[in-house]
Image (cartoon, rainbow, N blue to C red; front, side, top):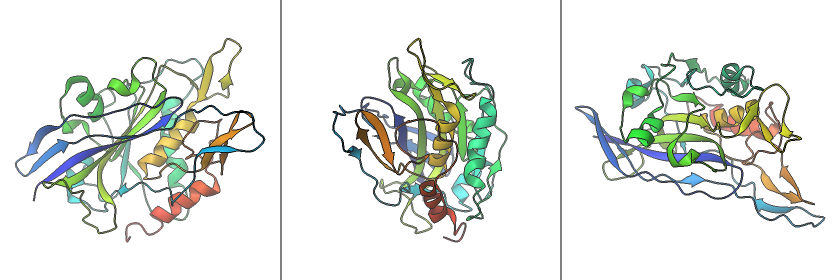
Amino acid sequence: MKWYLRVMILVIIFGSVIIVGFTKQNASANENNTYTFGLAYAEVMTHPDSGETGHVIYFRQDVGNAHLSDDFVYDDPRRAALNGGNPGVTYGVKTGFLSSDIHLTDQVGWMHNSFYTWASQACSQLSLTENPVNPSSPGYVAKYYGEGVSDLSLVQADITHIGFLGVGPIFAEGTNVLSVSYTLYWFDEQGHSSDIDNNGKADVAFRETYYNDQFEWSDNGVEGLQPDGTFIFDFPTVAIHEAGHGLSAGHSGSIGFKRGILVANPRAVMNAVYINPLRELTGRDNGIYCSNWAQWPNR
């Protein structure tokens, strides 16, 4: 049986809708496996006209369990060639694509801490293992976007924070995308998503996260609208959100406007729109994580 890779894109949006796609490409990894990219889709959030009413106008409703529709399979033999043979879930942090923003003091530390924030929850036996990654090599998706080259040697962990690296049309000039997490999953020769553990979810091959350096970022408490009109985003807030996507958490919370102010109910790290700094998981976030990982690996 041959297995293939398909791409899914998850993005934090601050503004207008974007449309993203991949053309198909084949690349042989070895004699027994062929990996193919299919079309991608983007989960986006728009910024509508709020009005000035006294009640909340919601433009995104909190529904479902906020899990992604795909997940990692414990001891998946197909992932072994990509993550060094670890049966569980591995992560990597690249240090070669950092931002020079003056208010970022420990961006590498926060990329690491974003995983610890989730993995420290006592409800799960999931043990994240850090894999060494080439600090200066581009991510798989960046290589594909930039050169049209499918190079699986670039994949060295199940979840990788690539860093501040431009990614094709996603981070085109003037875009409203703050960050993006890509999920690549297995599907068979007939185009059906793989589900070898029969849990009703497509099987993840690996995930990569990128941050957009066209925006101003900080981790030292300087945040929000500045006197010169610049808006500065809290990097730890966004990194923890993206690590949540890496660990199969989807967007949650009803998002809307009240008297022109952006609000979320309930407030959570996994809200789909950046509102203000939030560096600790809320009850909603804990519920998403624990309901997905509490039975790992026997789920």
